[in-house]
Amino acid sequence: MSMPLHRFVPFVCALLAASALPARADEAPSVEDWSLHGQATFTDQYHPSFTSPFQGANSLGPRASAKETFDATLFAGARLWRGAEIYVNPEIDQGFGLSNTLGLAGFSSGEAYKVGKSHPYFRLQRAFMRQTFDLGGPEQTLAADANQLAGTRTQNNLVLTLGKFAVTDVFDGNGYAHDPRGDFLNWSIIDAGAFDYAADAWGYSYGAASELNLGHWSLRAGLFNLSKVPNSEKLESDFHQHESVLEIEHRHTLAGQPGKVRVLWFDNHGKMGSYADALALATTTGSPPDTSLVRRWASRTGVALNVEQQIDDSLGVFIRASANDGSKEAFEFTEINRSLAAGVALKGSRWGRAKDTLGAAVEVSGISAAARAYLAAGGMGILIGDGQLPRYGCERIGEAYYDASLSDHLGLTMDLQHVDNPAYDAARGPVWAMAVRVHAAF
Image (cartoon, rainbow, N blue to C red; front, side):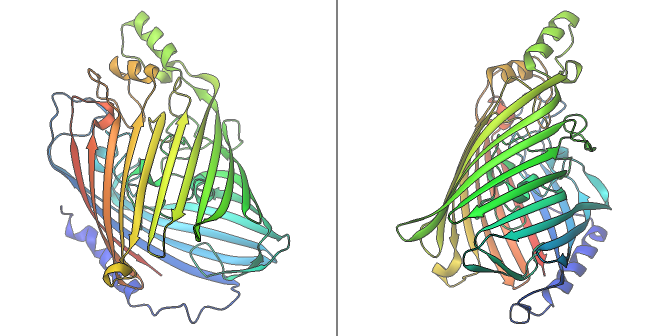
């Protein structure tokens, strides 16, 4: 795995600058009026050649390949008035996912966007306001962090968020599998695979979310703009096409250890194509089916279960299960109609490296009969489409990583993935993917 030297220079500079910073934990004020944090992440991912009797426009290329991604983000925040904060996250991105982020329903790198570019480019990924209303109960301390000003709030509270941010900043969180810069990389492990959440090609949307926290319970609701057309770089601005999200969370103690259970429901309302309509049109025209030709106003719903449980101070486990309406095309995320993922995360305190983490997970995803027929007839999806599907099989993914802490600000991760039936195609693969990730933060 390699990358041109000139692309690596800015990353090395960012790492050196971040790793030289002193620790701030003892210096951070109890209440911040403003803050600046930053991160830089470089990921190089490689897969060797694999069995492939055929391939299509959206296939993972069968020849050995390596691709790299780089992003650097500034997290700037300021307090406006009591309980009100504003944050902006300008970011520089560069690089490509394997096969231009195509060919796997559960794509192998959460650091790879659907838009790849050879040269660094600028994006304003987040710009949002957060208002917190205290509703009583014991006082909680909020530590200084990216997009979080140090301060306090009561245990019971109402949090409103408005602006541009990621749906997954608020929904489908998980302490063991949710951060491609620090834990697992695979899309269908860090998020619920069948959660077709509103997002542009970089994973962000304009919207609003509310979080009501009362004791051991939280209730979240959100409304977000969908893309102008499925899987687009441009978002709606008037909620004409939108996603509604609801999530309920319960925090519990099991055998003296903390855990959380979340149940999520979403509904996407917009112009989308059904697989049956696309196949019917293809029968008439003699062309491959194309959902973009049969889009009309419709809704597509889904649900997700998300559980995390600490076993002891060093070991935690998680499980996610999700499903959605498989009669219509995916709008934003990927072609997964049902998904089950489970994994563990083990802290390195057991071998004398308390800040290291070893993680392992498995995930199985599938698609509906209608989606299978569409792909078998030559249809293309957001991420997948081999031009044919002679033998369907559930996509099965295994991932393991070791994240080594090199300093308070610098981490090095080795990641290994194995994918059976890539893009649900039992005639291709299996695929091995190896990655190196370097992450700096302050």
